[in-house]
Length: 518
Image 1 (spheres, rainbow, N blue to C red):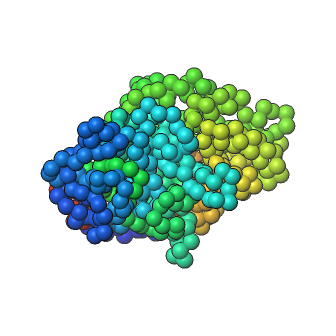
Image 2: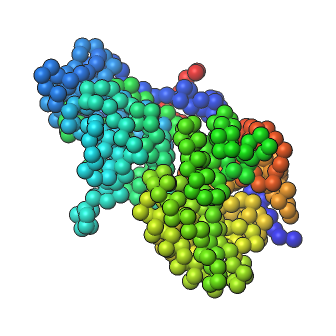
Image 3: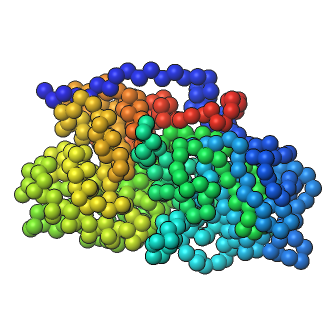
């Protein structure tokens, strides 16, 4: 019999604050940085003023004028003063920020003092370069490169309001992760940025600090920084809260039954039960566009589309419509979940690698034009069968937009390992996504290896602890293939179990102070 993973029991001490955080982090641990004074900010505040409100200066739309009172901050009479730094330092955060700019003005919100969400007058303006727009993730900078600016990310939509109007950012940010030696094992990422109620970014990784950050290095935590020297800007109602656990979504194998067949029906049940979105099989561009429309209407994300390659010389390598699908996914950071099949090569055979690398490289180059990433999907009894196979092939492709998926049920079906920690650590540099489900540790078939998350003997909480210890901050999906029964009940049971198990992913709430009753 194959040896199965038995993660030891994990003792999780749930303090009162952690219990409250599980119910509603934003209400129980909400730290306000704006109010009657600069108490939350480092003492050298330059010409920043506390004001009751702000507006365009009479006769000069390129300036802001403050109004008496408190609750807002204005960067002085000239709009050219020092940056503000929060006293408290943070790692993972959920942030709400309200701001106002004058005509043609410019500022920025730097998470950890390093990673900028651009504040800019983009009202009815064309973009000069990626990341300059309001709501853009500003570019990195290297004078030895051509062009010198790189990795700027434009917002999916120009959601800007006119100068002199208050605007909002709602952001979920994940700090970079480091091992015990200080080596970075996971990049910083903006999980979500919402500008004036419109989702403009999903799951964007940053390989390092953006240009004009206060620090050139990377650390586990840092202050919130408001840029004060690029033009008139005002801020108000800034608060931070714990980011909470990783995004949790469902595969479409868990969302279909007699009452949930259409994209609208699947999206609606996911929205009702609190899922972040879906991962779906690719059945053509038209179905993809329909799914995107229904998800967008509910503020949900398409985390991935499931399709494959065939490495045999007498077979089409992939669905040719996939190239057109990349256009529909432009800027969404949806993953292409790519399984690999062959009749010529046995499971896991490296002899198939050259052809696989050729096909995947071709797809990756086309996908990169639309900022689409490819994640190799290990599948039992397919040529690309094991997580190790996916890592091996991804390493040979060696492109930043090609990574791997860890599928718990397929790993349990084929693995002889007694622990998955070393495998997760090996996958981490390219680990784009993880799929989980309830399972029996010694299961031999899909009925025992794929269950709702509240069932089975496999230690899900221990597995999530392993992910957390490895530094994984990305999305986690629920695999529901073959479970059967009522989708709504399955998804509800699974979400309830997720809320319990995911406590190990909630991170440090200490920077936000003692819990407050909602």
